[in-house]
Amino acid sequence: MKRFLILFLVLPAFLCNAQEAGKMQWFDDAKLGIFIHWGIYAVDGVGESWSFYNRQLTHEDYMAQAKRFTAAKYDPQAWADLIASSGAKYTVITSKHHDGVALWDTRADDKSIAKMSPAARDVLTPFAEAVRTRGIKLGLYYSLLDWSHPDYPNIYRDGPAKYDIKADPARWQRFLDFDDAQLQELYNAYQPDLWWFDGDWEQDAETWKAKEITDKLRSQNPKCIINSRIQGYGDYGTPEIGVPVVRPADRYWELCYTINDSWGFQHRDVNFKSPQMVLRTLVDCISNGGNLLLDIGPREDGTIPEEEVEVLRELGRWTAKHSEAVYGTRAGIPGDHVKAYTAVNAKGDVLYLYLPYKPIGPVEVKGLIDHIKNIRVVGSDIAPKWKIFNKLSWTEVPGLLEITVPEEALDSAITVIAIEMDGPVQLYRGPGQVITFNE
Ligand code: GLC
Image (cartoon, rainbow, N blue to C red; front, side, top):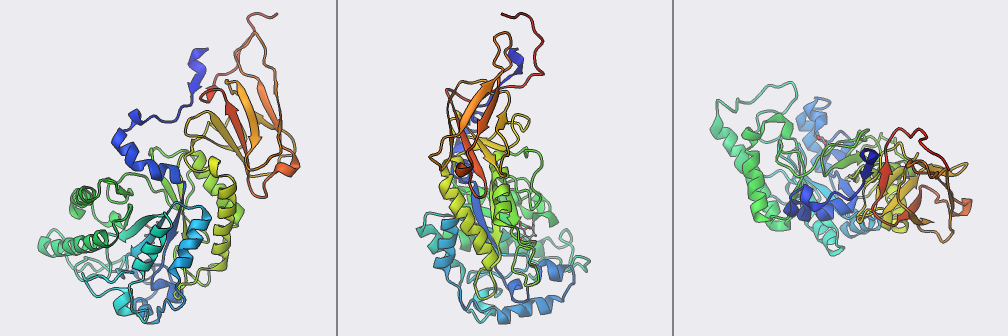
């Protein structure tokens, strides 16, 4: 019998290194972050950087969008308010995408909103300040590769290469020095809580000097978190767009995800997900122990599409009502116990069930060993009814738990049930038992 028992305790710190667990704590607890892709690509609504790389337009036409990037209605306080009200605990903004155009007034070259556009100012600093005053952690997206830089070997997918890195290491070193100079500017100005690298795939770890880059950033701020896109030197996994079907192997991970089908603003893309669909994805991430980094793509003038605002507002309503079942939770139990997303609290003695549907009968939970102290609907005073069936003396297979949620207690998007146990969640994972005695 014993071999079928699984004790579902929160992954104790001793499993990973305690220092790392300490550093990762806020990230592990945060569950929701807001990603922002803002750049000159929003002017004509073309794919961020990729559109020229894939020759959908010339590099020259792409860069010419900068002349029409106005930031005329940009309100960083309002952005920060919206992010805070969504319930997100951190944000990640594209300080520089693969096109090389910096949102801050970089001194490392002339490619910035400040120098190339009528906005004519650093648009990153006021945002960084606004989020920090609201207690939101700041993450900076930074593309290691820069397809517009004279010392980066390529502009277009199909070439031609400007030079061969191995044949001209001095030129490549000039590019690495440029990245280093920009990273130092960003560090000095913002001390980001999180470095969100991208574009590492074009070179290997040795060519990027990935170890040197991450060692330096970590020595400057041992608490900074670094995502995985720096050829194996990061702290957490970053599955992109595709929601993981099975639990990712990384202890820490974050799904970066779009609200429509694009990262940056694209006029023609109206394939917006509904707020409920995005909430379902958030809960899916939570139940698998990860975070959701949800992207918004502001227009060139700094306004945020209404459909995206609506999604963030609904996230805010739902996360505020269900905060105990969001922040600080840990991955839930295997899906064969209940037809719902699940998670546990940090202590491991409350099991949360997330119902993204309206049940037409009781919700059934199989294989829960512990004694149940109480069952409630999170954010509601209306008590659900519950009953255990078939808890028979001759078998150690737990009985079937049935929970009936009154219609008035259902949430308009996703209902959360909290099952409070008298100890850490324990599960029976066996094939059932044949009778050996009866009473
Ligand atoms: C990709 C793309 C990019 C996007 C990013 C967001 O790696 O290069 O356009 O910014 O993912 O995760």
